[in-house]
Length: 355
Image (tube, rainbow, N blue to C red):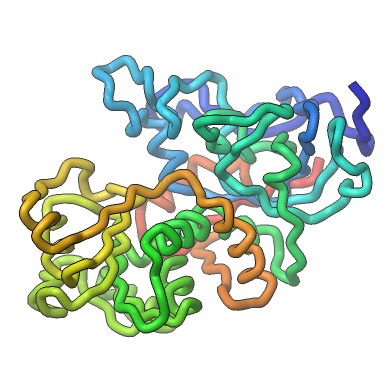
């Protein structure tokens, strides 16, 4: 195989997940082999990555619906192969390319699309997810298909850019699937988190009217991001906003209060979900679904236009990064603890040191 490289080392540093369980399953290693590019692949030297719910959910086998065996614990429903380098966000520069990729791409600054439909020259169906179905960005280098490494031209630092891929593409995918249009009222649950705060900005960028469900102490920050109105997460949205007063619900929470989200939707309204931090099992009265002609959208795999559109918005400055904290990658356990404390708004980024 012919490979164009720029003096890649044989070994690299990073964090590996050694099994399902607590933070002690995250292990710093200095003896990880640097990945080799397959056909149509690139190797990216990671400058920064970020913490997401999915990292913790994968570690805990939260995605698994099996009893105790975690045989379906990845996003795609396959078992996790340990040791695994997690990390679904990634910003960096292309350091090497495989067959079929222009060597002139070496040195490009890129954002990595987290939903992978190609690897090693093969089409993936179902898609893989970076850091779940394959090694991700919690290391010095990561290998992805060239089509998933998007050139980005921006004055933002790597840590700021690394806050975009997973959260913002998830939010933009939900808005795309639900067909959010200008002038529509859109209720966002979990609005202070990475995906929720991204959705507030992206709704505003579409000319929509974002309504944010959050803690009262974070309301001012979300209004500064573009929320037209904020609701405390303990409030009943129907009492606050009125029945059938919202065009779209963007839900990241689920949980016991879920039925009220459908009551607040207008007839013909749309509901999109990409998270269940408040509880994965909810109660649905099917009469509400069909008598109100509601449309439901489960959102994981990205629509093809989502990530290119996101990069354009970043380059235009139409959306901005929102960083709660920045940690070095070596302090991943501390960064996840800060993430779980939920005292921040936006994302927690991780910088990857040059070695």
